[in-house]
Image 1 (cartoon, helix red, strand yellow):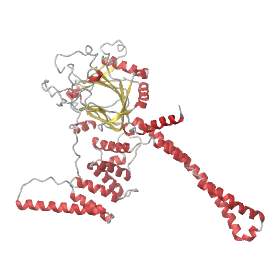
Image 2 (image 1 turned 135 degrees about the horizontal axis):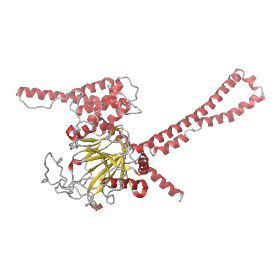
Image 3 (image 1 turned 90 degrees about the vertical axis):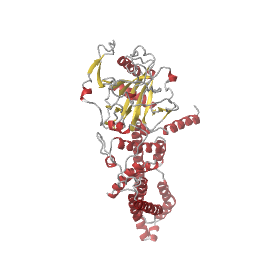
Amino acid sequence: MKPWLQLFFTCTLLIWHTEAEFFTSIGQMTDLIYAEKDLVQSLKEYIRAEEIKLSQIKSWAEKMDVLTSKSSSDPEGYLAHPVNAYKLVKRLNTDWLELENLVLQDTTNGFIANLTIQRQFFPTEEDETGAAKALMRLQDTYKLDPETLSRGNLPGTKYRSSLTVGDCFGMGKTAYNDGDYYHTVLWMEQALKQHDEGEDTTVSKVEILDYLSYAVFQFGDLHRAMELTRRLISLDSTHERAGSNLRYFEKLLEKEREEKEQEKSNKTMATTEPVVQSGAYERPLDYLPERDIYEALCRGEGVKMTPRRQKRLFCRYHDGNRNPHLLIAPFKEEDEWDSPHIVRYYDVMSDEEIEKIKQLAKPKLARATVRDPKTGVLTVASYRVSKSSWLEEDDDPVVAKVNQRMQQITGLTVKTAELLQVANYGMGGQYEPHFDFSRRPFDSTLKSEGNRLATFLNYKDEPDAFKRLGTGNRVATFLNYMSDVEAGGATVFPDFGAAIWPKKGTAVFWYNLFRSGEGDYRTRHAACPVLVGCKWVSNKWFHERGNEFLRPCGRTEVD
């Protein structure tokens, strides 16, 4: 290959790599640890080179100090000796030039060259923003105050780390730039608190108060906005924006008083918006209707595991309906939920198999996508933060072995199933409530006895996501947990209040469709944000085709 062509492909590869999103995968973020370690080593080598250079200069200076003290005390007497006269000329013509070259010698080349190469693999602005939003997501989901996060007081942490004033200020700025004034207030307040406590920082109180006062104003808290602005002006009386803001706030407050006086004089009973208590602001509502239920389940709250339901759950040995491969070595099966039936299998994958699959998947990891319900096009989304890859049986015998094992356990064929998907969750990695199956128009006449069948969701405008595969809908999900997670990371089902926690080597299984082929809308589930730890999973989605006689139709639409 021609050198210029090789360089082109190398640069192309590097450019592609720089566009990778590190924050979406802890597995890939580990590479950054080694990159940073290499940079520190390179920096140490630069420091050593500088120290050697400085030592040589210092030695020369000391020698010349002694010599010039002697020569300057009696210049004529000193130069009377012809050797001294020669050496003076030589020093000024040659030796001082050599010293000049030594001083000008650039020892930074090696370090700068290494830094330039490594920078191509550094996280981007998008990564920093994504990481900040991930911390805010953890803060909201697990009800952590900024103080807790800033001090690093998280459960199950081996290495504690804290946030500086600058870090908290950066978090607040990220929220502010995103129009998220709720988190702006929280993090700017934390930055101000740590600043007031005397923490050393390059961020000024004026900068913090500037953002904080405006964010507070966005919540309609005029009194506190004025109080913060006055504090800002007391620190910097020349701050133009603060002065104009204060005058604007005063006008608004005066107008508000006049309106109240007018209401009193007219004796009106018009309702006014409740006054916001200083510093207490509610988190705004968002697009997810079951947000509160979902996040409560992630915290282990609101799980509807009653004693009556618990009595219906059992453990047993599972032989795959007398599958010859499982008769001698059946799998341990445990009921996680009764209806819909969710089971957990133990010792599904060995540690060696897990490590091999992670090793195969890691180079292929790419930002996980979701299918747009309107267009059917795959795209990235903020509600799915992870990286995934797809493994074929030809990649390694272990993939075929694991696929075969899932077929034996479920009694379903893998011939029409999707490839084995491996996912690694990054900072605050999650997948908000979703369905695994493709939604067809919901039949409003569908009825079931007893409690509600599921939350009513109509997707009449959504295209059939799996039509092009020709294998029908996703009939079932087999989810392998390939790591333990110190905190967070549960799989939750908001519709019926179940929470299933990751256990390395185990797998959970459930059907997404009723035997009639209708979607079981109760199976809407989510992967909770990972609070502490690194979460690896792999899953197999079984499809309808090929399983018509392995899982035949029932007598009713909801069997």
